[in-house]
Amino acid sequence: MAFLSKKNKEALTSPIGANNPILVQILGICSTLAVTAKLKPAFVMALSVMVVTAVANLVISLMRKGIPSRIRIIVQLVVVAALVILVDQILKAFVYDVSKSLSVFVGLIITNCIIMGRLEAFALGNKPMPSFLDGIGNGLGYGMILIIVGFFRELLGSGQLWGYQVIPQWCYDHGYSNNGLIILPPMALIIVGIIIWVHRSKNTSLQEK
Amino acid sequence: MDLRKLVDNIKPSFEEGGKFSALHSTFDAFETFLFVPKTVTTRGSHIRDVMDIKRTMSVVIIALLPALLFGMFNIGYQHSMATGANETILGNFWFGFLHMLPLIIVSYVTGLAIEFASAQIRHHEVNEGFLVTGLLIPMIMPIDVPLWMLAIATAFAVILGKEVFGGTGMNIFNPALLARAFIFFSYPTKISGDKVWTYGLDGGLTPVDGFSGATPLSIAPNAMANGTTVDWSCLPVMDWFYGFIPGSIGETSTLAILIGAAILIFTGIASWKVMVSVFAGGFVMGSLLNLIDANTYMQMPAYYHLLIGGFAFGAVFMATDPVTGAQTETGKWIYGAIIGIMAVLIRVFNAGYPEGMMLAILFANAIAPIIDYYVVQANISRRQKRVKCSTK
Image 1 (cartoon, helix red, strand yellow):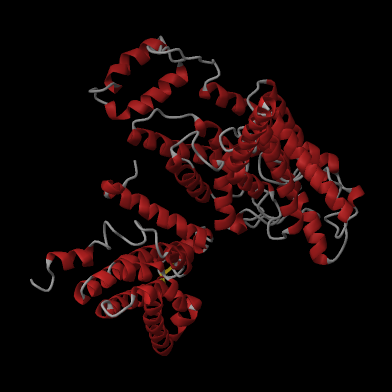
Image 2 (tube, helix red, strand yellow; image 1 turned 90 degrees about the vertical axis):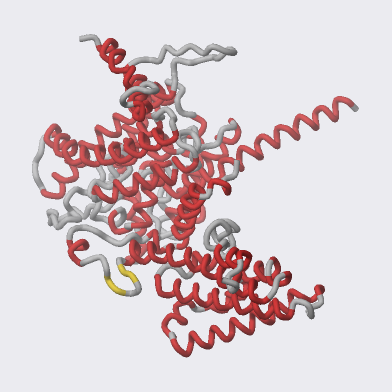
């Protein structure tokens, strides 16, 4: 299919696997630790970052020939900031409770290294279509990790998934209790570490000698 | 039946190509546990000491025995106090032994299973590091800790505290303390408060009048929370020293711990410098707080700090861990002093953490490499200066 040429497909899929922004480039760790205590905010955050990355990549790629390289960071920031404000307003309008629980971290998407990294590394030198796909791919790669971390933290930390109780009362009556450590950000970092461990042992070319 | 012959008979099936070659590490561990290996190195000269890791660990286990046996007795003693029963010493000990045994078994089974599995996966020999850790973990737990929590904490400590760093001798943090920290932060209600230190009290046992189960650590925080003061001169300090108080299983008796310390120092296993500087650091910090004299906790005589909670146990068995501590001789003094000072500071200033010893040691573990680095650098620059001055 012409739509997904080999290069485009590569741009879309490599950030999900071997070139994952969190697992390989270790970017975006701050928000990964901050918003993953529950699955729902993690999912919304993942979606927001994906939209911002993809659209920012598209816009910057369209403008790439007109941007003087001296002020390109400012231009990128303006584009990203505009998109983040849009996302913030949409979240406030439609999912107000999640927006409340994400609090400042929606605004801080603008400082997410993944977005600036993709703009600098990819969008400034590629055509709009691959850039857009690259943004989607990186957003997916980022979101995938957020959802995995959020899944384990909500399940083990609160006994819930997506706000619904999944660990039955029966277990609590027989001595089970929720793990308080996993709610704290340090344990999120350890979970990310374990995911990196699994990822490296599957992708042997990434292992440092 | 000769044991040596039996081992030699089954040996071939565990060698490469044998029926059970996958279990080679396991076999090797048991063989060297029974017999000193007679392997001779073929190249170069190696100086070997009879005190290999196995013998070292065995001595630490022996040093832990006084505290362990007293801890078992104290479990029964505290339970008798709570129920008002008039038990004999032996009866108390037997009660404690029966209730301590499951904790030890769970800790060893979980930890050794992970150790053996990871040695098998990596084709390493099974290391003996867990021999001591497996006993330390139950000794720093309250008797009422649920067994499944103990198993998870042990697994966490062994996998993420030790194996990911490369196994025995490579870990940054003391695995036993990591297990305790894991429970402390994950399930705080099971390892703090007044009720968990006496068997059954958390599970609905109604104690006789006058028995609260509170540890000496909570005297000052409770008094401050109620707005009262404590008359420090009227407390049963000798009981604190002998250990007839509620607390984590192995840590209550300072006397039994000091016997262990004597064994460790006499055999040269643990560094006396670390022990002395931990006690000195705690005492100096306590004395400084006496001078500040701002609340009733600060008025507590400084040497009380060394008797209560896990201070002595941490100083003797945890801080002296040769892997996670400072390696340089000067560094050991600094490292120990930091532990003592931090432990007292955390106790007095942070109401959320009644016992600061665990956090102090973990903190010192983290900065031990930095201490060593600067001690070595200081030595280098001192000698460079000497060379420069003498050549002038």
